[in-house]
Image 1 (cartoon, helix red, strand yellow):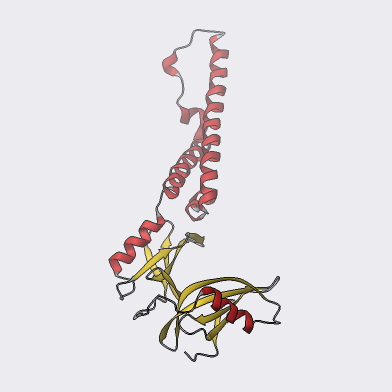
Image 2 (cartoon, rainbow, N blue to C red):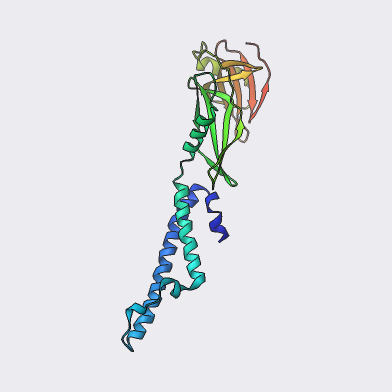
Length: 247
């Protein structure tokens, strides 16, 4: 019974599988009970005429323990179907709109990532885009109770006050070349380069986020100024270390 009470906390894929499994078990149990009852009735009919109105009910045949188990299974199936049908993203979007949590510049949007389960909650992560360019380390994280569907803010690191031109003067190819010079003899190889907005010492810059990879190690990122081509920051894993911020 404990398993059924915690069913809303399980991953969505497992819930779907459990819906089918519990449905099959539920129907099989009911079928077996009626077959057993039918066999008993056939035995009685072979000896005497039977009054069909006196047939026992399902609860009488099954007994209290089996009846309770079947009811718990039925409730779990209905609960799973309800949980799977929840639009978690919609709950998050409505909360953001009601609380006015979006950035204040008029050009920003929040794009949701896939929700995931953590403990008793569904976690919704949102990434910040300014004029369709991602803003580095500007995120909003919401937490939704898996049972009550109550929404709360888990982390709000949205950056405000962005006012940046998004037409780079340095091409992605030139930025990658500059970054490769910086990474020469490091063992890392160029992976990709994408436009982004970075905040350095309270000032926002348009940059090329150039990613380098080496087998068995965390990716390393160099940020190259998109207006002049200078290396502005170096990041490894999730931690930033500002080094040359001359713009």
